[in-house]
Length: 561
Ligand SMILES: Cc1cc2nc3c(=O)[nH]c(=O)nc-3n(C[C@H](O)[C@H](O)[C@H](O)COP(=O)(O)OP(=O)(O)OC[C@H]3O[C@@H](n4cnc5c(N)ncnc54)[C@H](O)[C@@H]3O)c2cc1C
Image (cartoon, rainbow, N blue to C red; front, side):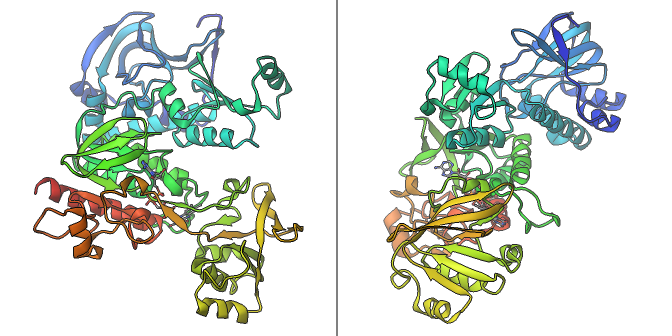
């Protein structure tokens, strides 16, 4: 090892975990890998792939030694030496995204080399190797994440919404980064002041060591890191899935695993609403709950394992319904083509403009009031925000579990927005109090919401109370504005499908076929809607996943039509 090098040790001391991260394949498994690739000699010092190389190949060492390193201007970090039977690669090998480490030969020998397509075919067809490789790839990424060993530095403040967005974008893309907090590090702040970096420029993102981005958009970061570079955007796909929440991810997993050519398009970050849920307690098969990020990032890797391509920070902006195959225009000016489209763009809950709201989502701020949330309330006071029926139903329901329910409405009453029967129930319920002309202004707490502040808009009076649960029942808007001119929507903008479509809807959309729309099919043939975006859907992770899986059956049917 050269003098300027440092070595990073894999944190878990347990030998078994290190063996899972850097396993040594048995002679039988080495032979199975070799059957898919080509054996070739290596020279000392040869760089097999470098940081930033897209679609880097996979290498199995059969003789000699390879080092995985992170080169930098002042010190090269040696991550691991690989010996015969060990192999290169981590999650980026599946997506074709640029490599985060360099692989170089430290002792001459031989390697078996597999390109991206051969590696995918190997993990899809060989269950034993798939398990070993997938586990190693995921654990290696976890190590890079935990040690911040990426090619990105974020400089920001946790009190700045832009910093939280950038951290969420990198985190939900599982991209490792180092973070410097301006509030903690006076030297960095002084440096930025000297370079005239103002508050509007925060966060600063230093990307790949050579680009300095000031308050970048997610799309700019994705471009700089080459997230979408390996994807052929001109290719005609069997199916384009719009939205990578649970519905879109499930559709991608099933469609790709059944041999369809799948492109998944995500305007923001993979995971959707579910990805922001700190713990999903009611998803089938996870008795102790699972964080939304864990659930959806596993599905994200799974979809890529089966060959689905994922474009991030690139949203659908228009669907051209007039011609088939369909053309989908994206926010970054691309035109994508597909035989069928699955719309899984979900809904956005209306959120009051309160700083810190998203920080307490799942830990004091909720968008649903079901039996599960009621259990969290445990005889404490709660706030319900909103004046429509969903807020009224939530208040009545929560009054059985909470010590007191306060409904905060900005207007002067509930009469214009809530059904009369609910208003009467609220009036007759001593546990419920309605505060009119009132808006929530602040949330406080550490790991859980502890206190709230509200303001009376008429008198200006501000009050602070120790309340730990806020239910936001301000409604949800479907993400369908990009579809308005070609698909039948219901009165609230959700997509109508199957038997819900009337003859009038089909006539207005120019439905060309003798048959009626299939289950989950919209008013355009081969355009399906699943999950929260679909009119009448149950707003749950499990139902979104279920609809994603069954929609693929209908995609096959339409493609073969
Ligand atoms: C904080 C929170 C906690 C929750 N907890 C639970 C729970 O415990 N249990 C439960 O069952 N449900 C829960 N839910 C509800 C559940 O998350 C949703 O029902 C589920 O995520 C819906 O999945 P979806 O894929 O249909 O849509 P979404 O999750 O909304 O995903 C839609 C995706 O589409 C993307 N998108 C939107 N427009 C475009 C476009 N034009 N182009 C490309 N992409 C686009 C979005 O960025 C998003 O990633 C929770 C919701 C929230 C907000």
